[in-house]
Amino acid sequence: MKLLRVGPAGAERPALLDQDGTLRDLSALVDDVDGGLLADASALDRIRGALAAGVLPALDATGLRIGPPVGRIGKVVCIGLNYHGHAAETGQATPAEPVVFLKAADTVVGPDDTVLVPRRSTKTDWEVELAIVIGRTARYLESDEQALAHIAGYAVAHDVSEREFQIERGGTWDKGKNCETFNPLGPWLVTADEVPDPQALSLKLWVNGELKQDGNTSDQIFPVAEVVRYVSQFMTLYPGDIINTGTPGGVAMGQPEPKPYLRAGDVVELEIEGLGRQRQELKDA
Image 1: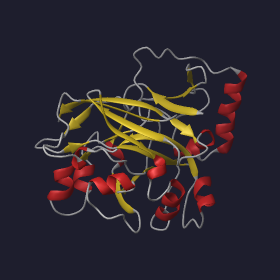
Image 2 (image 1 turned 180 degrees about the horizontal axis):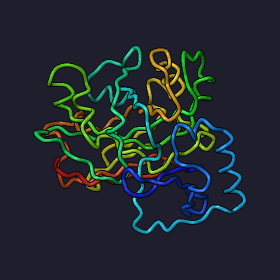
Image 3 (image 1 turned 30 degrees about the vertical axis):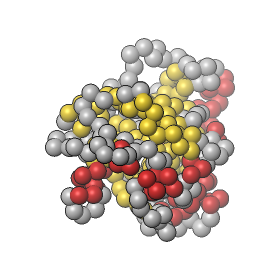
């Protein structure tokens, strides 16, 4: 299934995109697409049953905003330097273990919402990423099989980053990762049963129509299952938590000088095979 949330920011309603591309209202069945729903197998079965029975009312998508596909996100866990190509382009060694950092849940916005270039920013960068959405509480998982069983689904994420704040201003990466609007997510959550191999997905990103990133999750240093298993050793993952799994090569930081960092007025578009497409216009904060 493709689950999503539509409507004004802060007042989104649950919806589903059917196989014909028609938007269907889920409001009569569930309150929201959130961790509570994703952990409730019976509720998900009711949605599947209603979809199969053809009783879900259609929504007019004209002018309707798409919000983040998951509400009430607890935390956003991110994996840095997780593609061989990205590590190589930035001149860094392949990590021996996953590089883990956190983004605040309030950085998450809809897939087509405006992205704000922070004040005094000169190095705002793009990063298309596969996002994992957790569906079951995960603690100290022991195998890849267990890890995959705790995944509710997948989504497109844009891990926007400010490189000067991240690297040159001291301390941890948090300064360059937690600016407002720095994590567009969606357009929808594709349930795990519809993604048979998360290590065979193409990822692409364009800036002002020019292709900048063209990668595949097969280039990940630590694959999806290992990421979930590993992270569960250090923190408890709850239903509705998000894990951004790293970006392929092609970011602005990895390009020759003058590096083409993002500015107000730029348009970024990104997509992951089978998971949908995003489009953001950048404005000054």
